[in-house]
Image (tube, rainbow, N blue to C red):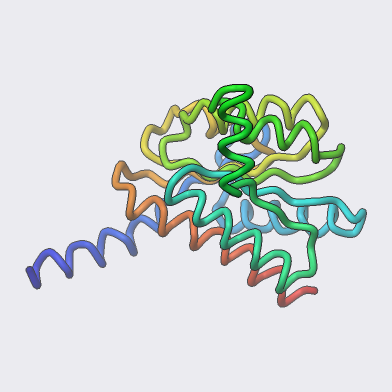
Length: 190
């Protein structure tokens, strides 16, 4: 067991250093520059009193909830996630699960808001549908994904962060790291 514990730790540290960031043209950029782009986008939009939305499924929903609270409480931003059980079941029942985030984005977003999508696979239909609606409304998008290098979510944002792993735990912890990284930098420059 001790050997496996050490391997997991080393894999995670190596994984953090191998996160791939891309810009809106899907060109590789330095990870730190990607963080800077995300921070500047959120800072610029928050000065316009824009909102920031976080969406994800399962463990990614927990990350989205946590990030929304941190961005609201620590940064004073109008941050939201859409994981209320009544909202989820209502939208799923009335429109279908693939619209569970798209409909709230349609109802609540305005041009120049920011949508942060968190999906380990980058293939979740409900996340991709939310991106489609957000794009049609002029919402800026930041994506966090993993698993397949060519997942469809990975090329949808102003800034995209791809975690090159197929292990849920590692991808999710890396996504949480990215959200905290952005929030912590913004707090220092508030």
